[in-house]
Amino acid sequence: MPELPEVETYVRELTPLLAGRRVGAAQVFWPRTIAAPDVATFQTQIIGQEFATFGRRGKYMLLGLASGATLIVHLRMTGHLQVEPASVTPDKHTHVMLDLDSGERLLFRDARKFGRIWLVDDSAPVLARLGPEPLSDDFSPGGLGALLAGRQAAIKALLLDQTIVAGVGNIYADEALFRAGIHPLRSGGGLTEVEVVRLYAAVCAVLADGIAAAGSSLGVSSIQNYQRPSGAPGSFQEQHRVFQRTGQPCLVCGAPIARIVVAQRSSHFCPHCQK
Image (tube, rainbow, N blue to C red):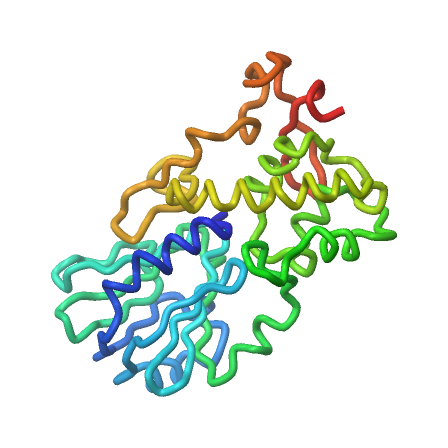
C-alpha cells in the first residue's frame, strides 16, 4: 500500500503536471471511489475547478483548488493517479477520469477498488484523527514516548496506528524497527527512553530514504502497489533490509529473516538483530 514516501512522491511529481490546469469534464466509472459528496454532485462541482496547491497529510494527497475546496485522494492498496493524453483509452481499472484544459486527462486507477476521493470545502473532518507528521516539528522523541506510554500493544501494531504517527505503514514500520533494533512484538509502553529515541530516529531516516528513492514498488505490474505518476516504479525496494525478505540472510548478521503476523499484517524482522 502506498505509504508516506510514495504519497509524497505523487505530490511532488504531480505538481508541475497539474498546477494551473482546469477540469473540463468528469466521469466516474466506479461510484464507490467517491467518498464525498455524492457522485452527481462531485461531477458537477469539480468542473471548472483549477488545481492551485499541492500537499500531503499522512497517506492523504491534498490537491487544493483555486476555489478553496480540496480534492483529497487516498490510494489505499493499489490506487494510482496519472496524467495522460486524452487519446489514451481508459482501461478496466480506471474509476475516475478528469479532462483537463491542457488536452490531457487525470486518471485514477485502482485494481482492488479500495481507494477513495473526497471533494470538500473543509478537509479537517477527513483528517481529524491523524497523529503527528513524522517529518515535521510536531514529531519528537518526547512526543513519541508520550504516545506510547502505558500502551501494551505490540510496537509494530502501534506504528501502523495512524493516530500515533501519520503515514507509516507495513513497509516502513518493518524497516524502521530493524534499524532501531526493536522486535515487532515488544510492548510499545515497554520501550526504554533510549529505545524510543532510536525508534524516532529510525522512522525519520527510513521515510526520508524512501522519499529520496521515490518510494517502494512491489508486486506484478497489473496490481503493483505503487507506480509514480509517470508510470515508472520507485526504487526503495532495492534498499529493503527485512521487508518481504523472509528466509534471506540479514544484511547485518547473516541470520535468516523471519516473518510473523502482527495486527493481521505480515511483519519481517531479524531474530538476531531484533531480540
